[in-house]
Every structure is written in C-alpha cells, then in structure tokens.
Amino acid sequence: MQDRAFLLTTAALLHDVGKAFRKMGHFSLSSPQKAHPIIGSQIVLQAVEELEKEGSKSEEISTRIKKLKALAYLILAHHEQYQNYWQEKFTDLDINHLLPLLYILRAMDGLSAFYREKGEEEENKIEQQGVLKFFYTLEEVKGISEEERERYLFYPMGYYDFPLIELEKEKSQKREKYGKNLTTHLYKELLNHLKRIPVREEEEDRWILSLLRILREYTLFVNSYQQASLPVISLYTHLLSTA
Image 1 (tube, rainbow, N blue to C red):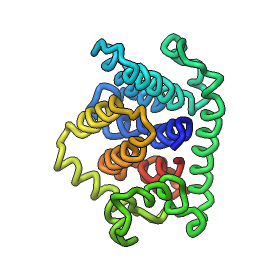
Image 2: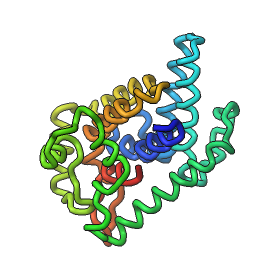
Image 3: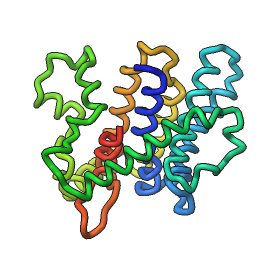
Image 4: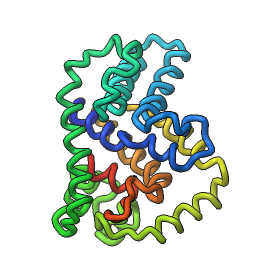
C-alpha cells in the first residue's frame, strides 16, 4: 500500500474513534466539553509524546512520529471547524501536502452518512468498500469461506440492518468483560498499536488488520449516529464504510 493510501485508510478508520470515548464514558478523555475530533487526535498525539519521551533518535522512530502527527491532523481536521485548532502542535507538518487527503476523508465521511440516510441497502454493503477488498487479499484469510469471514471480523455485513437490541447485547457483554474500565482498555490497546505504526510497506496490511480487530472489539456496539428518522448505525460500520 502506498504511504499516502495507508495514511488515508488509517485516518478513515480512526476519524470518529473519539465518539467511542465520549459515548462509553468512564475515562478522562470522554469529557463532554471535548468534540470527538479533538479526542481522537489527542490519543494519537499521546502516542507521539510517549515515543518522544523514549528519547530514541533513530530514523524509524522519527518516521513513526511524522506519520502519527499527520494522522492526528487528519483526524482533527476532518470536521472543518477544527482545521486550525492546535496549530502549535503541527508546525513541523506540511499541511498543504495533507490537504488532498483531508478533502478525500471529508468526502468519504459525507458519503458514508449519505448512504445511511438514503438506505440503498443492496448497493452499499460493506463488502463493496475498500477496506474489505484489501482484507480479503491477506494471506492469513485466503481460503476461508465467506460465512467464516463474516463471523471472523466483518459483521454486520448489511449496512443498516444491525438492530439496536443486538448493539445493546454487545455492549452488555463488553461491560461484563471489562467493567467500568472499558474505555481504558480501548485507550491502552489503541495507544500501544499506534506507537507501532509501520514504517515499511510490507508491514502495513498486518498492522491495519490488527487495528480492525481492536476497533471491532470496542466500537461495534457504539452507535455512530441515531435520530428518529434514521436507522441505528454501528460506529464500527461507519468507520469501515468511510475507509
């Protein structure tokens, strides 16, 4: 995967992750005063801070820090009103270089919402989206049947038809498993994974797959958006369809 494509895919998968922290609660980052783009960006910048504290001057660590800062900016600025927020944290970034990726991310986020509102079920299932296509090409899942693939990671396969009662059941199971530390578990797993963001192209697919596992574990049961006129959409589903 080319570097810019990898960065855009990662940003798409994480652009709304701040919603999980706001909606699950029990964590300092979930302050209702903080918008979800700020929360998501803050987590990525925390990974940057921890890498910098380790004090390594290696080229690999420098590359990871550069990628993470670009990712943090894309997550923050995917809502236009935050494009100039925290400017002091991104002074070493070439923002103009990132603008094409940012515009694509905003467009895909909008398209995902449009599909949700229009409800074109058969034409807009997740299996037609980019992330699933590349997932199917990975060596470790080749030869697995379609049914097994769905159970393995990618249900709900239909875009709109995962009922609220199932989301609530999943939430209940996670609460039983993690208790009040649910968001802390997500934060730690995500932070550690971000600190290992790949610097070589051959490592990217496996890293993305591990990221998907983390997101599946913690965000399937979180509602991305809900109002009376629209169906309930899992946050995980929205992140996938954006990517």
